[in-house]
Length: 181
Image (cartoon, rainbow, N blue to C red; front, side, top):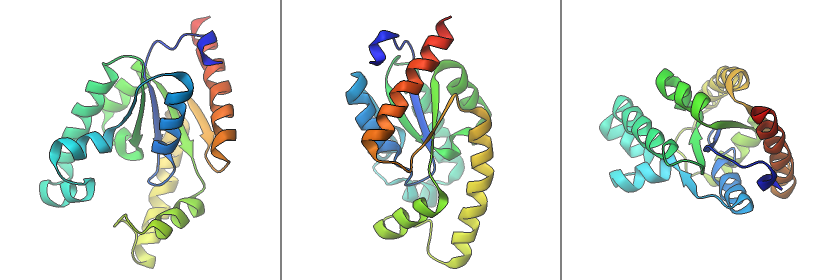
């Protein structure tokens, strides 16, 4: 169990839209008995708008400012589980905070699985046309490289959630044990 090696800082789960960050984060937080936070959900609650509407009405720059403030605040809470999006690393200061003050986990899910989830749910406005799907695929490849280079732990998210959690806890234990030696 994870308690064998005390978690002394936040765990941040980063991934593409529909990669399962919130689902995995909630289940992980229960398994290791830590509070769960979803940065987008907190921002939506505070702003009274969904993320897409914040981008549309307030602008990308405003959203990134609020996102950085929110994530920094949560990281300063101490040990917890936080899910956040792949664009978080576009802010260099925020990327440095996450890499230096948290255990950063990249939930890596195959692009075709992500696209299928998005299209099945049809609640996200990011994909509508073939051109937008190709743009998303290109962005995925760029983000994939950055996340692979920076995150402390990479976990494949294309498996059953129970199996994924067991693998994740094992990797967390190994990371924590290695960080303390």
